[in-house]
Each structure stands twice: as structure tokens, then as C-alpha cells.
Image 1 (cartoon, rainbow, N blue to C red):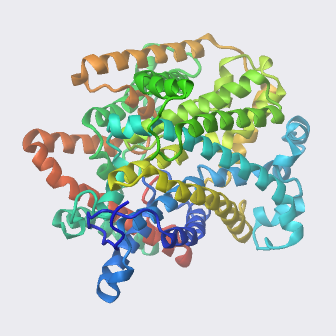
Image 2 (image 1 turned 135 degrees about the vertical axis):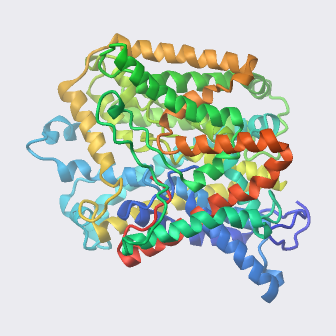
Length: 639
């Protein structure tokens, strides 16, 4: 793969592939990173992983780049190569798709929730628990006491034993899920990275930090100017928690205080997150416009519906619009890349040359691996108790959504708050009496990984492949770091949740998402099993109309691109409650810069917007370390 000499971050000489020391360093940092994230998010509600560009991998990469500068002076031969720096970064990014309250915390919360919180009043012991698989959950309340109440006691045989089987089952489940996504990424990599050349805003900062994009980033006055505001304001915001008289600018979300309908139901918070404005600068203008426009478009429907006298329960059916938009967008993605799929599937069928020697996996292995992974997940849900068609449907829809989210990240880099297609929501389109208890239980059991889909593995995997492409390395050399990081992260994530839970107490001291998933899961199952719901034509009509609208947006986008209405925005925009305002700001700034300064001004401004992200992430990381030490909820980057 070229010259094997060590390289400084910023050196663009040929790179060597992954090294043993990079793998070892990544493995050492993964448990530390998992514990840091779990402690911050589960205990202190310090949000580090809800956005596509995770905070802690950027912090660790910055530390390694700084260490490299020191090694230049004291031991040049020991410097990290750019490939080594990105190997560690990728491994830590993978760990953040697992060690997050949108994934592993959700799972760990639900494993003992039913046994611990069942009461005669909620009647879970009669309606739900007897029909849940015993092997998938923890039922020993004496072992669960320390997890929910805190006070330690994890490392005892009688405490650990009840956890081993369910943790092993769900570990296997996660590995099958991640492996299937990896296979799908192999099949779309060439089309989306080399042929379509999508923008991948999320990788711009890590590439710039190692010198592959925006050379001389740390010598740019514009970068330091951009970093100055979040660094100073974040410091003041954290100090304000210790001394309330310290002034600062509130960049976090503030909800409007409307009291009268329909404005009181809008829930459109304003926010000025520096990192979101910075990331938004790298999004194409039409996508950037569409994301914030369609957020307000959904809100406008509420106002118009109110004044038009529409009093239908659930109007404007935001969830149902999401179901129609996301499914149609996923099908369109398959359609617009049909020539690529025809080429790949045709070569597979005819056993001809696929030219995949440098791919992460051979295309035949990837195709049959994806099919086997999906089949295994269908079998899992059948064993749980779901019937054949719903089991196939929920697996197929999940991976169609995974493809769609991956595309959204590759084009917009925006947060993707998506739970519209969750089985519990899909099942509301039919009469609950047609579902059966097994399908309702299965839908509830899947809630933990469907919930919001903000920390998603598939786009993170493809972003790693994009960085490898820009680095000029064969995708095949990335296989070992991805697999090793995935396995290590799943194990480390489970351990970190148990450690924080037994030390702090899930139901006593934890203040974040630690409790919400269990409440939502059992409330949903109980409602569907006890009260049920009937078929409603307006809900189905909303799905059909939103699907047709998505198709119309795709047609106009291909013929009238000047309208700046992208179907991606209709999918992702309604869920951008926290970042629609920063995207609006970024759109205004980028439009003005490009219109009056051209591409030259756009490129000169890049370091400034990267500085907004880097400064915000650095000070947020510092406060995520200080908060447990000072016993306060310090400056939060997000939410």
C-alpha cells in the first residue's frame, strides 16, 4: 500500500494500512470511551452521541494529533501515521453507535424493567410478562436491586449469573444486526462514494484534523476565530452552574411560551448550537433549505388545520406522514441506483467478474451475508412469537430505513430522529385485534433499538469507508478494525451500563434517558393488549398521501432543482426539532457567502465553521469529565 514511514497528521504522502499498535490503542480506548459516554449520558444527561458526529471520538483524535506534535520533537520515529489516527477514530466512532442511550442504554434499561416495576396496579404480571421470552430478560429481583437502587455489588456470582444468558442473546442479536449492515454497505459503497460522490459532511472535521481535508487547519486564524465563541461561552455556561451570576449566551433549545391554540402545540424550539451551524455549512444548499423548511412545513399544517376546523384526532398525522415519506424514499434510493444493483446482481447471477478484490468483503459474501443476517433476524422474531408476515415486514422495513438514514447522513449530515416506522407505529395502521399477542409483544421488545435511530451503525460504517477512500487505502484493510471494534464495543457497552447502574442506581440517581425506554415499551404493549385500537382511514390516507408527495418531490427535484425542495428534507426535516434553527442559520450564511463571494469565499470560510464544531466539542468534552467530579450538570453541547 505504499511507503511505510510514519507520517504526521497533515502529511499527504502515501499511507500504510492498519497497524497493530493502532488496533491495540483502539481496543484500549473503547472501554474507556464506553464508560465515559454511559456515565455522562445515563447518569448526568450530558449528551455526547445524539448527533451524527460523535463528541468523544473527536476529542480523542484531537488528543492524538496533539500527541503527534509532541512526538515530532521527542521521538519522531514513534509518530502516528494518518491511517493510524483514523483507525483509532473509526474504532471509537463505532463504539459510540453502541455506547449510547439511543442503543445499549435502551436495551439494558428494559432487561429487568418488567420484573422490577410490575405491580398489582399495572397488571403487567398478568397481561405481559408471562408472554415474554424468559431467556431474553432478567427476572431475579434480588439481582436487579443493586442495578435500580445503586450501591455497588455487581461483581458477585449471584448478581452476575441472571444477566449472562440475556446479555449473550442480545449480544448475538446486535452482532448479526451490525454484520448485516456491514454487508449492505459493501453493496452500496461504490455507488454512493465513488459514482454519486455524496458530500459526507460528517467526515469533514476528522479528515481536516489529520490534514486530508483543509490542510493547515490548526494554523488557520479563521479556525481559531470560529472556535473562540463556543470555547468561551461553553466555559462561562459551565461556570454558571457553580456561580449563577456568571453570564453566558444560551445556545441550547428554548421552547416558545405560546398559551393559546394552535400555537401552544407547535413545540418549535429555537437553538443556536455552534456545532450544528458548523456542520450545516457543509450540507448542499438545497438539502440544507429542505431540512428546516419541512420542519416548519409540518408545524404550519397544525396551524392551518386548526383554523380550517379540522378536528380529526391525531391531525396532521406526523407519524403517518413519516411512514409514507421514509418508505417511499427508501424505495426511490433502490430505484435511482438500479443500474448499480443490476450490475452487481447480474454479475452474482452469471458468476462473472465483480471487480471486488479491494472491497471490504467480496460482493458474493456481502450479498449472501446480508440475506443470511436478515433471515436470522426473522427467525429470532418468529421464536419470540411473531407470525411470519409481520416478522418479515419489520426486518425488511428496518433495513430499508437503515439504507435511507445512511443516505441522509451521507448527503445532509443531519440528526435523524426517526421512530415513525417502528413496529408499534406500523401496527397502528391496522385493527389491533388482527395482530395477536405475539406480534404486539415482539413490537414492544424491538422498541429499544428502533427508538429514534439517532446513533445508527450503518451510516457510521459507510463514513469510515468514505474516510478510507479519501485516504487512498483499500477498503479491505478496514475490515479488521470494524469487526474488532464492533465486538469490543458491544461487550464494553453492556459492561459500562452495568457498572454505572450498580454504582449510581438507574431509578435513584440517573437523570437521563435511563428510564424512558422501559416506560414507553411497557406502556405501549399494555395499551395495545388491554385497550387496543381500531382501524382509522385518515391514518392510512396520510401514509398514502405522504408517499405520493415524496414521489412528487423526487420528480420535481430531478426536473426543477431550482425549487430547492428535496425529498430528503421531507423525511428528515420533521424530526429536526433541535437543529432546524441552526440549519436555517447555516443556510442563510452559506447562501450569502456563495452568492457574493463565490466558491473562493466558501473555501476560505471552511476553517471558521470547522472551528465552531471543534471548539464546541472540546469544551463539551471537558465539562463531561468535570461534571461527575464537581457533582453538577455542566455545559451541555446539545438538547
